[in-house]
Image (cartoon, rainbow, N blue to C red; front, side):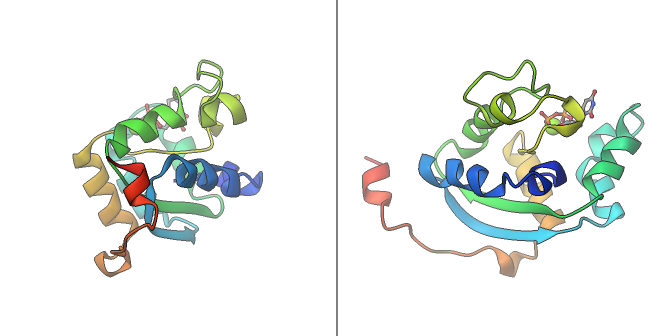
Length: 143
Ligand code: UDP
Ligand code: MG
């Protein structure tokens, strides 16, 4: 997900470019202002934490881009490409390391496990919005 700070700062294109260049396949994508209930569900694991309200306020404050991408090792690789939660600690070369400063404005979200990905995809998308197609370069991305 490109969070509202990423959209407002005009970073959506270059974030998508990183995903596409890596070789991951975009299978669903949309620009939305997340409704509060959906944002609370998305971040349910953080309910009760001191930053929860600010996080939900922020994530619902403007358009964000929800993306489903696919590929071998996609979840772990995308988390690595996103970088550490605190952008100041995120390695250079990562999205957060290159493009952010504050934990509360860290530009992107990425699912942290297959179970979270399945849960989050259901919050963001209708099953009919996930598209099934082949990238023409698959034969060159995979052995
Ligand atoms: N967050 C925050 N303050 C904190 C911890 C987290 O504002 O002290 C926000 C931050 O935007 C982070 C999100 O809550 O990306 C979810 O936190 P998590 O620990 O799951 O980090 P992530 O999985 O995004 O790296
Ligand atoms: Mg998380």
